[in-house]
Image 1 (tube, rainbow, N blue to C red):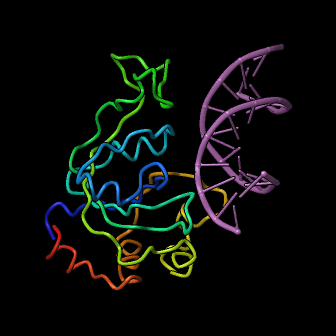
Image 2 (tube, chains in turn brown, yellow, red; image 1 turned 120 degrees about the vertical axis):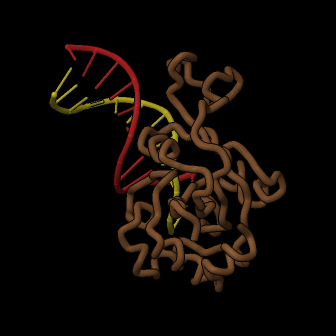
Length: 166
DNA sequence: GCCAACGTTGGC
DNA sequence: GCCAACGTTGGC
């Protein structure tokens, strides 16, 4: 794999608002609207080339729908200064923006949704904020074991992902 | 700095 | 639609 090795992430979105198929159609999009400091800090750690799982929350079924890649590192979230947006933040100053976004591109749609139940069945995911009760973090780092076990659970291999889609 | 009230997340 | 769990706000 390339050097430095990419960091791995999981990013949640509600598919009724923006789902993996929307990203696949657009090719590339801003990941904006994150309004939680811990999640924002993870966005700021992302580097071009990092890979992420696109997770559908508040969905039937909830689960991972595809793989994405970071194509632009953190810069000010456009919506915080948009009065028409529900993500408008009056307390965010233009000279010191409070919220960040990255740009991501679609890499690969999972052949089927990897459901939350299926993730819970994977030992690698036992301690993830995703599966732990009561945590609502919308952007989180993944271990290589978590990432690869999720791929494997839908019949994908990291080598194939790298060879065919990156 | 405490903490009650409130708003949001997100599975069910 | 319910509601548990959590983060944020704001009075004190």
